[in-house]
Length: 286
Image (tube, rainbow, N blue to C red):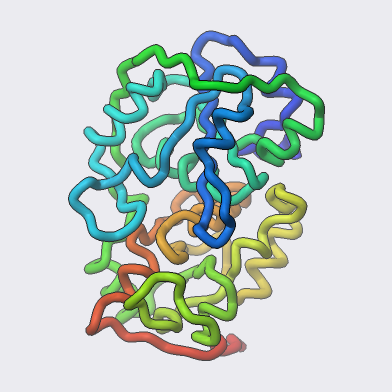
């Protein structure tokens, strides 16, 4: 999949190790049910030169929701401490192949980095290829990251209410179909089950095969199966804003760089007392 400008194969990244202006970011993050410790795994083994991006720490410190988008200043300070500049060539990966890395890919792009790619197959494929692995803490050399925030990439609750009311944009929900339809409880207490009116179910797992983003034809089939047009305006959503970015990556890979991400996602929508919620399958479009 070297033709996808948003991905880089392990062998290609291996050949760039040590290059000036290259930043490698371990963006591993796991659900509690997965029973994995991302930081401990980083210390045990990571790509040489990589730094660990803590998705639970680089957030809006005043927000009550998980993974809330930080301010440009908070993001810039955090990644600057990790030694990353907005002008760097940034490669992001995770420990599942393709799960949490797209969220950090999206964050860097949203805050102004221009050259951001995801390691195709993630750390599992790097390890399987027998490429060099380092252990221990990263050696940090703080840099200046100058943010250029793209406010148009993010949707907040008030705007999401307007979109749902008007039905003027496609909404792609990356959660499991069981959660979308309200047949499975939400993992967070106090969050109602179901989906936003007008939303379409596109579990992120349908865009991924063997820890890699599917080729373009497979992505197109997944969007078509969900009743979504990947060339038209889309807002992506999920449980807390992480796997929504897998859909955003898929859209960008198909040439749609204008998709927006609903940062509060279902945790925010389902927690509110006055937001409309539907259950059951999304209606089949003619």
